[in-house]
Amino acid sequence: MISFIVPAYNEEALIGRTLEALNRAARSIGEPYEIVVADDASSDRTAAIAPTHGARVVRVSRRQIAATRNAGARATTGDKLIFVDADTVVTNEVVRAAIEAMHQGAAGGGCAVSFDGQLPRYAELAFPMMVRLFRATGFACGCFLFCTRRAFDAAGGFDETLFASEEITMSRALKRQGRFVVLRESVTSSGRKLRMYSGTEVLRLFGGILLGGPKALRKRDGLEVWYGGRREDPEFAGD
Image 1 (cartoon, rainbow, N blue to C red):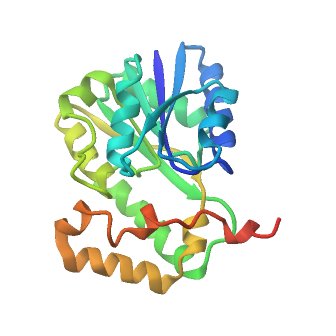
Image 2 (cartoon, rainbow, N blue to C red; image 1 turned 90 degrees about the vertical axis):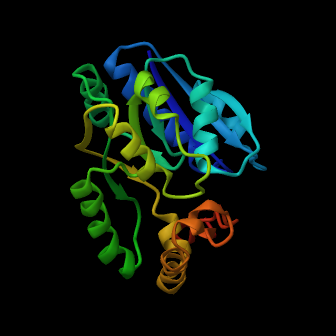
């Protein structure tokens, strides 16, 4: 069985399209599947919308991405796990490629990513380089990561001492369990966070992480891009 795990916090605006894309992709493959939405203390209609798209909801109150992903994984029964962020849309091709990679013995992997909508200039310049860097180093982007159940359990799941960059640590842990692949196929993630935060704010964020070292990733403070309250996409504000 394929188990899709979708961590979510106040994603009522986008989670419907994410779940529909997962349903389409899974039906095209023809294997049994399940979708679990790990709802991390949402105050909007995220948990109400998810079941209307065939997902089962697991309640979490941690406000931590790693812990929410782990909670979702614990609630699944499949032998193949695919973690997809609630603002990310998959294609049939990327899901099929992930499943085929695991069938062929891969412990896990990730894929390419693009962002929807109009991006600010700083993001147009910086993020293609970041995506290429992830590919060159063999790390999965956080919005789409897959692995076998065996590899996930052997790796110990996502590191719950981290509030960010847990996908890099997980990629390293999965590499110790076997072959780790970064697929050529891609997903489309929401570009809203890139639109909601200015280049100066993003530079200040990553500067704080660099200055604070690993300790900066072990606390929620200073990681507003991931844990701040901004949710409304400036591109669609007023619609």
